[in-house]
Image 1 (cartoon, rainbow, N blue to C red):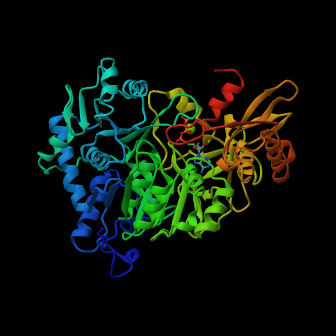
Image 2: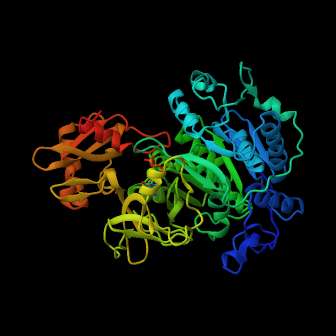
Length: 565
Ligand code: ATP
Ligand code: MG
């Protein structure tokens, strides 16, 4: 394996040609936000020029591997060259125009990055989706978005075909795969023969750039529209708040391509800093493969959902010596303090928490150098005034529980989604007074650190007490028998509802007497949290229901408890 040459003369932060530093006067408020912005021409092509001038370390911009020894490395220039070819495929071969929508369902393969950049060049709105979508999910997305084009793999093509007749607006189907299929064009063949002459389209900063379907943890996924500004320009303004990478560093995020986290952590934010995006095309999350990859490649930063870290700490971590890893981040769900401690005690590394939403991107984070308070998701991200509010949109003082909200008036800060597409009702419901409400409950302490309590609809109200599932789950997971757990409300004739825990047992406890283990777990929770929070009911399960992004579907467990499904 040939490692990139990472020698670099001079401190990258001091580079006057650094793309990020070119926006200093806007960050200081001395200059206005530009009217036009396009991530491809204003960030990627700029890095390409810097690279050509020999002012960027010889770190690839993109570095991809799979488990079968294949490897792809692109500089910013190569990324530019190839993505221009793809832009020509989309506009010339497929006849797509600015504003048209394209559904992109690919696993973590390099083409995903090429298509995204190409769409920006051509002003096409990208709608990413995960490869785990079923035919029904694809139909829902095609119909709701009115997409004109879909790009997917040969494996998913039959699923698309089974519903395509119900999608009149779908004009073009492109397949990234070796074979051929009737009604489909072969992406790879088309783009290899294209010219690389393409001039990037001019886009206004508020022009739509991407549409994400939310995870659908509660209800059906909502179409969340983001602009060039909200995703591409925001990281240029937000200081180095959550990533703080240099052009010689490498970041690996293990999230699926369908999720906004991948667009943030494996696309916009690292490339703003000119850093290298590393991808391992893992068919499934295998903790040994992940740990070995961290030992074999000079990865500086690792990003994943809490499930990733929960899985990794199940291994004997003393067997692994990471090559360069210094910075770990977890987001998408609350991270249990116990997992954080275990990871730290075995690797010496902290896990920095990030809290965000499809709608808002990163809302809070524990940035580099910030004091870590286990169980807290850090402070408000720059540009966002995050507060805890009550039902009437009054700001609550530190320590009081309420809804996590972000000030949206008089000025809607850069970073906010534009709207839930075709759903003005949902868009309106997300506003309260001067705030956008996240639908999550939490508290803020005197130092401005936020603590997550739970999704509004996950809160359990038992004998008048409000109990957030996360605190109970975090207490349970401290017990050596518990690998993973989900806590929900369950009906009770006396108390209305009680706390119930679904527990995935560690294999070493599989032959334990479950009755006494239940009592053990209950006592443990009583000792570590307020006793009224202990789970009166405990059920042992093999696995927990999760969304494709790996989030625990508490609503599914709750609905079963209440006989709603
Ligand atoms: P839907 O809105 O369709 O139900 P979803 O809310 O799960 O789906 P996402 O936008 O992917 O879709 O997830 C955002 C939510 O994830 C947040 O509102 C919050 O509940 C949760 N979340 C994200 N990061 C964290 C974190 N660090 N700690 C706690 N919760 C988090
Ligand atoms: Mg949501």
